[in-house]
Length: 237
Length: 237
DNA sequence: TCAGGAAAGATTGCATACGATTTTTGCGAG
DNA sequence: CTCGCAAAAATCGTATGCAATCTTTCCTGA
Image (cartoon, rainbow over the protein chains, first blue to last red):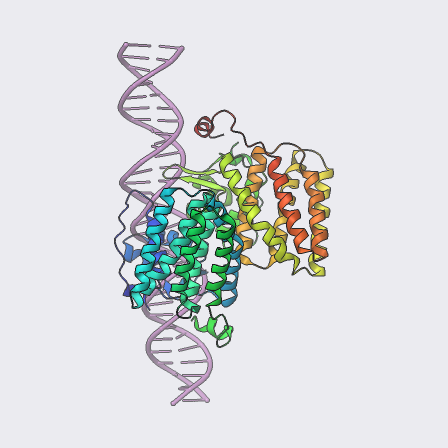
């Protein structure tokens, strides 16, 4: 897959940092799997596509590299990250450690407005599950991640929220790479159960459900190394 | 305090990325409080001091900004972060969530070599506590942080390790800003207790001790807003 | 036919240049 | 003496140029 095969909507919010806007669009493209793992992201090409200089494109790529979505090699350039099974395990180990605590914090801060936002979020999630086709599946993965991001924002800790943004993005990559078929609908119902616990202020239950939920997501992955990791890396698949 | 008042050792590891080396040195300077919170870090000055162009200096500052050690304002530049009490609370809330889990993971992976490294670390910590003067106190804060970083490296999760690097660095800033006097010696004994639990493979105890340890560190802070946060921010102190 | 290697092309790392924005300085009116 | 405003200086955001490095192509000799 070549980056030039894709089209990106124009950068609109002009007042904000342009590099940040480019980073956001590239991140969406990676998380949505419009950009396959291993894809080369050359500074020149990114710059041309977004109509900025290499300087700005480079800054955007550097940001993505910090988030672990892009791997950069000196004098070789930037590539969409291709997480190894070990990295995948570490992503989920991190989530198991952090997200139950996030759920507890969020349970203590839920307002009616939050509940409304969650319901809307879950509705959208359900719509994508009902649809078929690879596009719907992409949106489904993204929507599923958005549930967790919404939860993190409710928890009210900006630092943990940023950690979760990174972990969710990397999870999407991992799921796209190693996911089997149909955990998603199951995940949807788990999201609904978590919301119910949050609504009732039952933080312990929300936390426990979250832990199981993460376990289920990871259990649906096939993290066995396929043909020897050295070969995979050498071929950049 | 002006950045030019300080001297930095020369960048030695030439093969590595220069921006990264500059970031590391600036981070040390911030964590050691050789650079006071609020200090302006202008691209030109950093570039001149390290004998690189603004391009490289800018990249280093961008990295520090991602870690939360530096705050950048568009068209105004970069400043050493000046965490608010609320940010300080979030830092420690994050550590309370993450570090007990790190301790559990580390307990299951301790080797004799690790124990030796910990003992050396604690020895050094003890030496700085015995010494007097502001320089020793700086080294003491840094050494105390290094204990937690060593623990994170033993835990074997690169993602969590990076999170901890950020949290420990920000904690050092917070302690320098809001710390009262003498928790340090107390912290040292707590570190020794944690190591003992780790040596015995008693993960539950290590985890509980770690949680209390973090509570103690935070309890030693004075997080009351002093003269109105708006004034402080306006004056950039 | 195929391996080896040199040359051409592409891409990155870094420095520098220039317009835009902010901050400081200097000066005159009140 | 102080306040306000305009000019000067400093600093940032971004584009572009050049050298270094990597990749690809293509030619030669076995």
